[in-house]
Image (cartoon, rainbow, N blue to C red; front, side):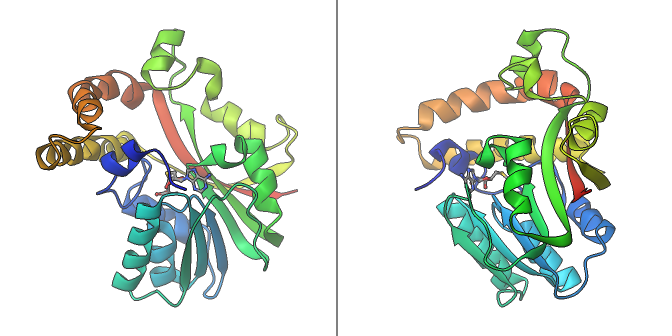
Length: 251
Ligand code: SAH
């Protein structure tokens, strides 16, 4: 069981697999007022940067589940490196349907809401692991600017304009407007510099990978991506797509 190989190639050097930077995760950890010993569940935990740094900085205990074998291995190494291996556990597996045995203080899915079929399904799944009074974290894209055409949405690698909402609509979808019945109690948004760290970091990784693997079966695909991605990203994603983490509490 693993994610498509292309992500493992392009994001092998990433510690954070979304447009957040280390300072954004630090801001979020502080904003949530995490108490030492708090339990955090993270579905789609990637290379574990959020749980490992919050374990170091706030004394939390965390469990992360991720379908990528490589990212899960990197998360375990990061925990060792930061001296928090006794506080965090990383499990390689499918997070679809995952509910923790023990209720948690924070249940998160940061940039992987397809795990439960979208934002609403993921919130529902996370709530099954959440203690009363706990906080749900959802990391999700939104339109910074509504794309004027479907072609522009496709340029952002969205299936269509309707895949994402503008920020006030996304906020409203969590609360009264969307009938999900959650209070939005905090929010930290990515910025374009963070998008650059996520997207532009892939380019050097691809270039170095191509030099090391010229005859690999994925070489042609990676070559094509390296050729087109910088222009596509700067023309579309960087201009039109926002991203943020939203903290929710059931009403
Ligand atoms: N939250 C992490 C990673 C976000 S990228 C971070 O902030 O860095 C999305 C992650 O979801 C990837 O690590 C990918 O391997 C993982 N993933 C995709 N499908 C999954 C599934 N069904 N179950 C668990 N993890 C999954």
